[in-house]
Length: 113
Length: 116
Image 1 (tube, rainbow over the protein chains, first blue to last red):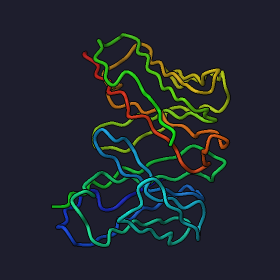
Image 2: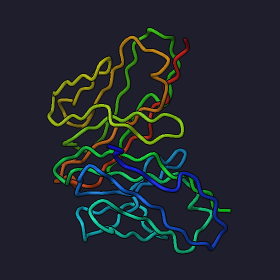
Image 3: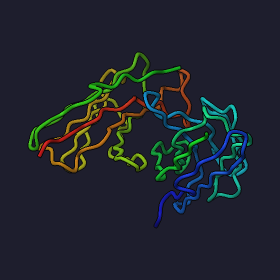
Image 4: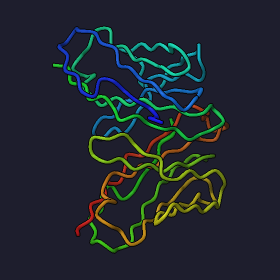
């Protein structure tokens, strides 16, 4: 059981480039989440997917898009990266909305120059 | 939105000492979670609390869900060097306070350093 996996682990982009961060979970969880972590700001929710086929905005969705590809996979896309999107991105999953325990992946460290 | 105030921001202790940290809010929470994050890693869930007054242990860690439902506490007994990391509290605000079953609110963390 790998839990929540994320790729890539590190990425450097130039301003304006696009990329997709991948996340997969093998716990048969219904709900998945994308967070960003910045110094002094803590963890902030970007988007979440309560169940396969649904996505909703979190606290800081601007500049991002998401796709819930299937029950296992939830991707985060930056269409035109900006330096303000330099951050560590974490994917998480939970069984469903009534099971409150969220389990996190190892993170993707993104630098936008 | 709801905010969680976590204190202290950092602690530097000697190996073997006990540690206490807490999280408070002006809103009622219906679930509290405690996570530990080590450098370069994702947060790892340590303890989950679901009822006011609940006291739950995980090895040397003990956490409590405050009676008022507006706070939670984490204690670590007999600290060891591998306890080093950032400890985060997180919670789900009560639905009547504008909470959601999907939107966790996080504290900003307590950085724990243990001197061997």
